[in-house]
Amino acid sequence: MRKSWTFWASALGAPAAVAAFAIAATPLLAQSASPAAAPASTMAALARQIVISNPEIAAQRHQVRVAAARLQAAEAGYLPTIEANGTVQRREIDIKNGSSTNDARYTAGQAGIEARLRFYDGDRTYNGVKIAKAELEATSAGLDAITSDILLELLTSAADVQLNRKILQFTEAQTEAIGEQLRATSRRLEFGEATRTDEELARARLATSQAGVLAATEELGVNGHRFRNVSGQSGTMVPPLPPLAPVPSSLAAAQKIAQDAAPRLRAARLNAQAGKSAVHFATGALLPQLDAVTGYDYLTGGATNTFTGKYPDDRSSLYYGLELRVPIFLPRDHAEVRRARAVRDQRLSQTDMAVRTVAEEVASAWTRWQSAKSTIAAAETAVAATQEAAEGIKKEAVGGNRTLTDVLNAQNELLNARVTLERAHRNEFVARASLLAATGQLNAQAILDGRCCGADTSERPTMSALGRPRMTEVGKAVVDPATAPRPQMSSLGQTADRTPADAAAPAGSSGRPASSALGRKLN
Image (cartoon, rainbow, N blue to C red; front, side, top):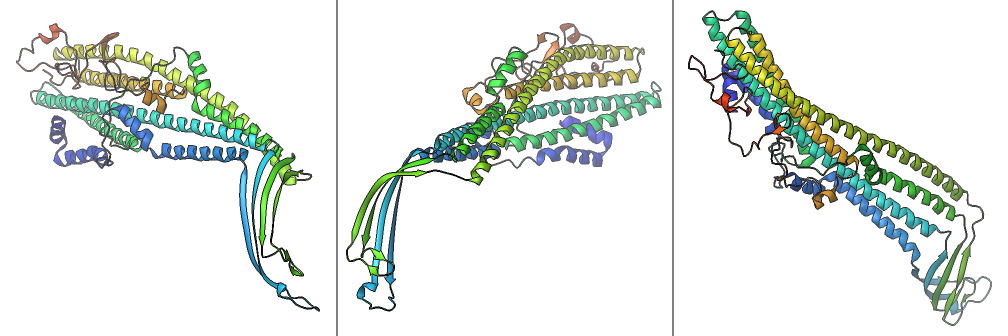
């Protein structure tokens, strides 16, 4: 990186280099103010931390608590109710046209306790419990759906950051290579071995490559902020992408799993079930209600008589029996039944729509996954062929059989091929994660059980920065770049796979270092 900015300073001048450095560094420095929590070093640890602390997941978790409390309230309808009451009054009675006695002024008190047990209420309690249970399960399914969306966004943003880093690395290396080419062309122009057109062409390609560096830096900063919004930690500290759970063996198998396990489809079905029970609940208000009632009353100060004063003795009473309520004309309850039926029909239609949506999501993710796998195979072939072609064009240019334009075009083709390959790796990873999310396998329990986002990568020792094997030829993987010795650098600053014959090839008759595939040194 230091070498790259040294080149920028020489090619653009100090003020422009400082400005470019500020533009490139600003998006990453803006993320340096990380939260107080220590950043997670693995995606599994980060996913667990997000499931606990993400505000959107926390809000849905509180909604589950609300639904659980509603279920407890509905189940309370099976229990008896006990209520106590008491009254103390001071009464003064004015007797008109008659004699007044001391009994006209007195203090009276009354206390009572009553217990009530509902025998029958039109099955409203039974259906109310069914509604609350279905809503609780639907809310829990909604929590799984939100968790799956957050985790998918986490993996997608992390893959985007990894991809943007690779693209930035490629474009910076290409800019450096073109700068070397420009300086070599300027030296050849001084000796009459090149034309002014060659120099201007190299300068134009350099400016275009510099614009590509700025665009790649912008994308890296944007996706870094996106990752920070999801994870709560800086986009400069993105853990390596984890291995994912195995995907279904076929599209039909994935569709079948999704129809049973997709969280949003489960939530829609449970809401429809609650809507059906709500119709029976509303209809129960039109049926008779039977309660068993028992109680005890105690009166002190005498039983009161509003007109003649109190009776002389205190008294108490114990009562018990049945209380029947028969509704005859209740317009509001009839309207509530019609409303409940409309809600039921609406939720049934929403369930049908959810079935179609889930099927579409699974099919789309499966198609993108299959396409990405095919693209990876084609891109690996393209990278290998383009790299060989670039080497050949470089050698032919030394002999005068190729022009500077051919060398610069080979640079762009190799850059585009490598970017296409890395983008295909990213698309394959995101498509697999999307397929797991669509089939309901990307949830918090999967993380806790280690079925998703695990930290163990021992089964895939040749993973690249995007979690896929780095290929030199079709069907042939190289060793892990993190553990392999650093080979000779290629034209884009990447580790190039060289054969023993290439490594032993002479550097050139002039004694200069060997030229790269992109003509960094044009002899």
